[in-house]
Length: 63
Image (cartoon, rainbow, N blue to C red):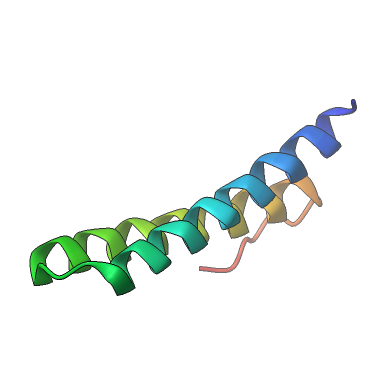
C-alpha cells in the first residue's frame, strides 16, 4: 500500500469515527457529554480534512 493510500485510509477512518461520535452525541442524555462528543467529532472531522488535503498536495488545507 502506498503512503498516499495509507493517508487517505486514515482520513476516511477519522471521518467514520467523527460520524460515530456525532451519532453518540445525539443519543447522549447528559448535555455536558453531548457537547464533549460533538466537540470531539468536529475536531476529528477538521483533522481528516487537513490530512486529506496534505495527502493530495494541497499546502493550504481548509479550516
